[in-house]
Amino acid sequence: MSRLQFEDNWKGVFEGAEFAVSESVWEKVEMDLVKMENKTNKTRVIFYQRLAAMVALFALMMATYIAYDSTSEHVGELQIAEDNISSDTKEIENASGSLNQGFVASKKEDIDNVVTTSSSQQGSRAALHSNTRSGLVNEATSADERPFHLLSDLIAFVPDFPPVEVKIKSKDFYEPNFPRKLPAMPTYLMASNTNDKGNEKLFASLGFAGGSYNPGAVSSSPSALSNMASRDSFIMAQAEPQSEQASMGTAYSIGVNAGKQLSKRWAIQSGLGYMVQNIDYTSNYTSVTPDNSLRAAVSEYADTETMIAISPPYSIRSVNKYFSVPFQVGYKLVDRKIGLQLNAGVSTDFFLNNTLKDDSGLTESYTQSAGDGSPYRSVNWSGLMGLELSHQLADRYQVALVPGIRYALSSVLKDDARVSYNPLVLDVGLRLKYIFK
Amino acid sequence: MLTEEDLIKGCAKGERASQKALYERYCQKMMAICLRYAKSEQEAEDILQEGFVKVFSNISKFRAESQLATWITRIMINTALNKQRSKVYMVPMLDVNEGHLIQEEEVSLSHFHMKDLLKVIQSLPDGCRIVFNLFAIEGYGHKEISEMTGISVGTSKSQYNRAKSLLRSKIEMLQKEKLSYEQATI
Image 1 (cartoon, each protein chain N blue to C red):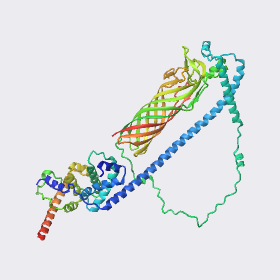
Image 2: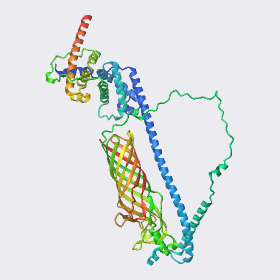
Image 3: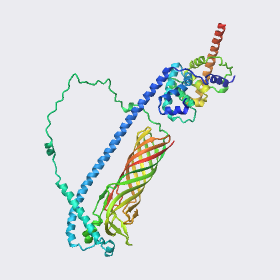
Image 4: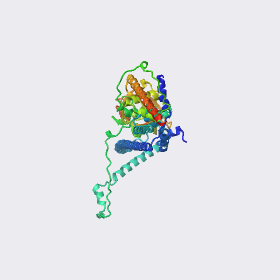
């Protein structure tokens, strides 16, 4: 007989063979499954505890930042109110001597026709100024007159309560008796239940993000328009040309990334992104082009060479567009089906253009890109930091929620600009990741 | 009656009823496999228990590229190998080529009881028993066995030949016992 027959004989005997199994086996299997489920629940609880702690920390940081920001803003507002009161007083004094003068905003006389408004408009504007002024004075007065209580004064108002005596009857008092104490198990003793990500070498992701945008403007020198106004009695007589920036804007971005898993915990990623940052202004003047058309303008980018005209206050949306190349290093804090990664890095941001849009249609939109004549730097660098809360959708797909911070390491405006802009973007992104295995 | 697909979905959700139904459908078949790899019934039950826990915890990874029975069988075999790995120390013996095998007349196994044959297999040394099961009954090649167990191809072949000669002698003894018993009963 051949060797094959030997194997066939044995194979034939056990093909489809079945043996009875004792009931106790299923009971043991069931017990193991229950243990496993408890363990999973325990690790899940630990994971959610850690996640909650991180979210709380993040929220605390955000709250601290917002509180700090609003405090500094409030101080700024009070300062502005004080300045306005003093400037309004001066304006009243000057207005009596120059009532017959029109609303001329430029040094050049040929612009007079463009910007001079009717007497009814003058009347309404005067009323507006008067109202604003009185409002500010009232506000300031009410702020000054507000009673200021010392803590000692407040304590004086608190009535004396008689001391409360708490009596516990000893026979009714029940002291709970805990049968055992739960052991505090150090993490290194816990069984590892991590996913096998050893093959996860390369990955690509597509994502978008949206959030708040704070330009982080800091004035380094008086506005060109202020200088101009101080030299020009026509402007001084009516109103100072100024624009006011909203404290917060919006930002959104889309991008593609590719990365590599360097080790079990560390990963690097880079990519390409398109970023838009919006912020609103209220301006009371426009710039006048050589062909006598009015163009949206804000004081930050004005220069003494541009002709300007005073206008009723109008809203402008400033839109900055960038093309960015981020580079980030990631460290996996939690490596499970739901994972958590801390990312940090830098981004090279290429300025594309800035558009000042006037939605009311009073003035023309104005777009300027980078270059010699532009106040914007062509290239900026931003620091990036964020978390990546990922969920394994399938074997090769992950979806991730990415809250992050982007802070410009240097001003996006050139050194000779009167203001310094270090934008801070706090956003939350959604990212779809494909893993090459 | 639940279909296999329903059972898999239920088990993936962690439904106990589906898990029990799946267990009941395959436990006896898997017990037969475990018994071949174990030295005793108790050890076979341990393998079966551990194997089914692995099946339930990994069933979400089952992609239906193979039959469910094949997938579970593979898990049981791997569990048995892992259990044996610590105690099995397979020494490479004579590296025998197929050409050198002694051609002997095979005894037909059809008239033996399965339980007796199982006892014969269980009486083999650990290394021989594993290689014999993998090669003769599961149908793996020596190269695959060497990858699965971490031994060389030569060791696998020599272990198999040793298992074969031991089985022959044990079957002969069993046959003699059977004949003498039959003669005594006549």
